[in-house]
Image 1 (spheres, rainbow, N blue to C red):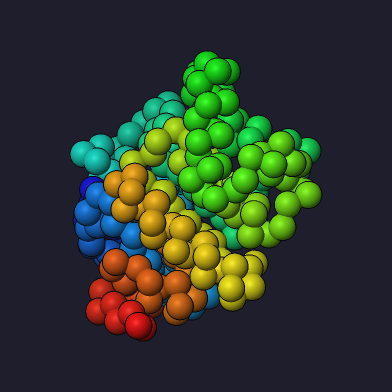
Image 2 (image 1 turned 60 degrees about the vertical axis):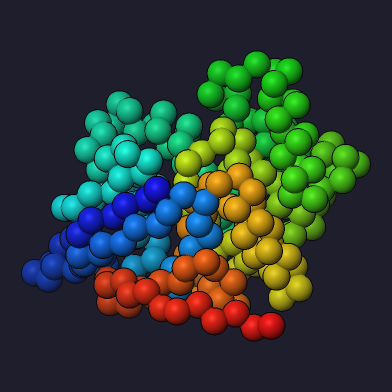
Length: 229
């Protein structure tokens, strides 16, 4: 479960104090596919950084599966991000001269997983994101955008994280491919019982989530999900 309690992030800009995240409280159950919808400048990226332990809140708490990451010392944050949180980015962030399988294996290597286990797990994950075995050995820069995003999702799952944070995961994809990625994230969250939280300005993506929130002026409100068909 993800539990966020009254988190605030302040920045000083000259004589002004800016609060891109201003007293946000919400919780998401394990295995939920949730979306946070917001325009550019609404505070989405700041909130994602706080949830992913990439930045610390000025005040408040972020608790993931019982661990208060807001209170973790810097010495433990690197290991926590590596082992317990997976990230999916709009730009994919794959290593271009590594194969799809090697990209997925890399986080496991940093976590000390044996080569045999890394290879086995990476192959299984790539199958789960519906990449054929032929594609496993192809260099990342030789894959289409949709395929690269599938590899990125498999990589995010590599260390079996409790929480996956996705930043505009369909932003660089055409509509049809974006719909496939949305369906894939939704399916994986339910099958693997992994909490997946997506920040996006894509209304179609947000509409497919189990829960939908809107972020505006640093505050978060939940909206009803109304799916088509």
